[in-house]
Length: 353
Image 1: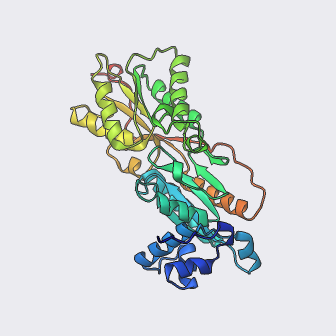
Image 2: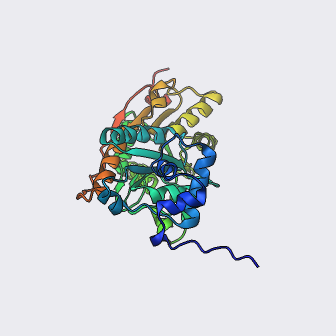
Image 3: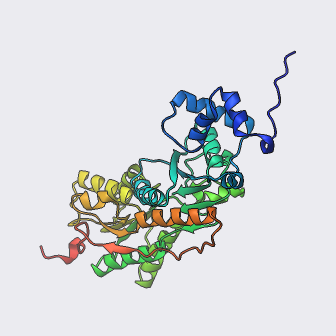
């Protein structure tokens, strides 16, 4: 009977052990650990497999005593091609380059949970961007220091979602709209359920704050919310299309929509136009985010602007301060600003024929 040797305990594993198991040099392991792109993919995978098998962990204190330091930060997001994520990542990258750190950017997928766990364990800290139910996060081991953008953690960076929603609604109400529909983003019943720390970490409340801003605005204006006027999406364009079809199919459809994400708002705009409606003459639409695609759309999308790049820069600075043992103070919610463009106008019945 062949007995496989038991891997050494994580506390006794050195970089030499990883190099021997992977059949590579210590320098190659170091390059993988530090996120260098010069390592061939097959070799990198062998090193990651060896790290996973041995339980190797970078020791920041030992590294500092040896004259070096861990300058690797993980950035973890549900999808890397989302415009929201790209904007935050741009700011994070600029800050990391300025401060002499490297970023390893990873997407939470169905098959890469093991690699994510390895790379995040080797990082000095992790930045979570827009955490959502799309990841298999229950098996993801995060480093000690974590900062999140638009998602709960010990140090969450958020915008004033409620105030931004109130700005959007006040704009539509001031134009004379009283039949205002709302498209929400991910909300608690859509997201990873359970009472585990991982489930709580990856829950989000931006959608609930925007929904609260919508309801409060309608109530303060003395308006009821008709049945079916609130639809739920997931911040992606397709869910905006589904939501607006449901809203426009109502017996008395809204004359304006507040959509809590630009991608969904653009999806709503395209469907309205496909159904023969003119934006904003027949239907006004307001989004949330002010992504680059909002200004480039036709008509230009009126939306709530949040400082995404600045949030990415701030998150990386906070993360590095944590790694350096510096005191970190969580900033208040970042302010929002309404960017008024061509997708909003008074309701049809108030304009002269």
